[in-house]
Image (cartoon, rainbow, N blue to C red; front, side, top):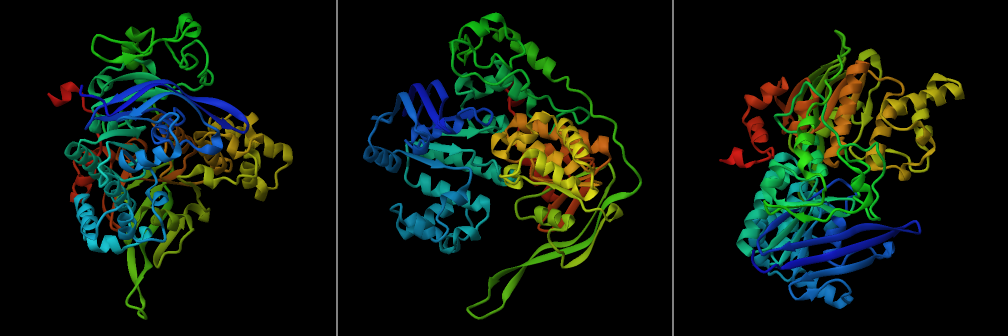
Length: 588
């Protein structure tokens, strides 16, 4: 390995929240060589983004960060550096690409002006916009950020970052919210630029398939500590830490068993304990021994060159094989009637104005969409960003009115909706119980009956009824999503509409949410429209997959038929772009 451009030793970070200091990173070591891509993998809250912020000297001041250890970037020591030196480092040596490109761009300034402020000439601006694959660079340079798609904004940020020729690029979940085709393009772009410029990339992700496709090495982080570090293909093929094995088992792909629920990581045996002389995974580990509670395992070097912090690595292969035996789905309750009927749906929105005084052009979003979903049936609607998926769901929900066509619900009963951002979907000043109970008000039930049914709904989605008095801010993101589902089903609906409910979730939460939704719709006989850009999730949860391209349904059929023998060229493009885990045998 060449001389590292980045060297982290014994990194400890404590951040304060509500007057209480918590250890977020505990003894992290990592070297990053020029041109190398290291993927940082772990659940939400594992400390991945904190590492990225610490490298740039950008830990939030309001959290009163306490940081110790060493971060050497080229010849600069980041820990303890003064503000002026950190600004120089961020200008010359390290850049970042965040998950939310809109939040990183100035909404009041054109793309070209923002790029010019980094020191690029007009010709260089156009050259870089072309290098990152953006069509018509002159138009893009003149556009405001809100005129661009999410994928286009992400490419702009990559151009702005890589044009500075940084030694290190921190990419923090840059493809999480993107559809599979744009995700594949962004991953290829990042690796090509890193190779051309010798830029080292720290790629933060919760998707092991993305890590396997992009990185040379992978670091698995749990509770602020490194659980495993090694060559990506070796870790994916045979993980040496039970947490890495759990992440691998919980993920799903185009070959997952559709007849069974997904394996999930245990969360029932206690909270993560970061501090103390013990393994911080012990409360969740199915192969823990008394030694794990008494002392902390070192990140030991193995014969194959990997490092794993586990006393019982020899038992991990058995854990991996047993985890794959997940329970089968329950029998579905259905009926002969349709929960939803969409007939010849057309929709357009006002676009740009033609000239100074001209009328605004209309942009066609949906063109003659027909779709029917039976009681107890799930149809997954897939397509790229801008294909019209969310617009169709909102029309089906009655939230947006169609220009032409008809929408029919079973019995005229309005559907319930589960949105992508569960936290935003909940009222912050009302308790969980109050928000679920609001749906019972039209039934005029007694207070005791309301409390009983709220408790039943919470138990149904795997939430302790004792949390009915909690506010949303006191719950995790996964718990908030379960609360929104409980609110939707406390009065059993005939139709449930799900708009990208797992797109921002780590693999373990996504698996739990898919299991929950798949089980409830079978047990309750609900029709379900599941909007997603994740073909693997669509294949797992749905009875049929409908493919939407530029507002038109181009293909609909059984999941395995769609995946194995796609008929439409657009469907074939979507299927081919899905990231896959690559092992040594598969690549031989």
